[in-house]
Image (cartoon, rainbow, N blue to C red; front, side, top):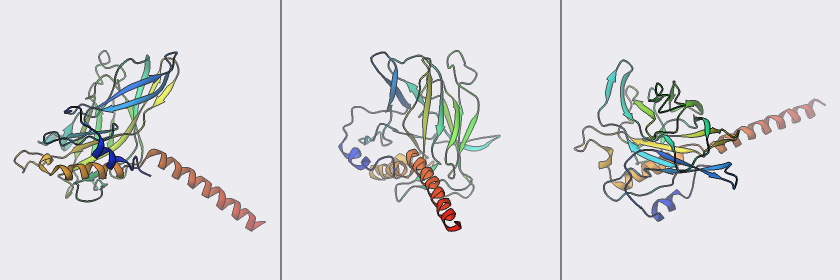
Length: 270
């Protein structure tokens, strides 16, 4: 099962209320009458990539943006960067003591001409916190890097402040010989928050998608692709990222199968 089989309807039936230019996910807390946190509501600040020619809105848990058009070369290699797509608080929040994210999928690629596929060998997305040293302005921002590849399943992240939608930097390194150059890359993650009252809540899956720009095009961007192709790439990525509950169910099914096989073996030996 994928995140949603209704996204096609959502893509065509939702109305746009304004053009969003990047940023990230805004998380609001739903509370009971006593102010105790019950659940999160996530709102994407950029539910579409095609921002110039009549954007097509998507579901609230998908964020779309673009990597920088110019690659950076340093001691780590050559990469394309983006800082949007991070989580941040919105509205009144109960006091919280810590927040951390978890990667829920591998890195997927689509150019909108077919099904999304895992990122090719050697390609990886490196995620790091931009505000580790700023514990006054961004308390909870923790050091560390996470590398997401096409074979990643799940992976723990590190602490975030939830104070800035540009907190997590993302560097995309393209594998040698890769043909996955001009399209979109995406992955899923969630955020767990520990509140001062002792409660702990985890968001639903948040899908972050970024277009890799083409420096050979006049505008230097995949955004020159027809809107339908961009939407197709987004839809392909959204449907390709495995739903965490499906992973959990697969694990449960495996355990049940193992117990069944053991029981059958014991009956055969009896």
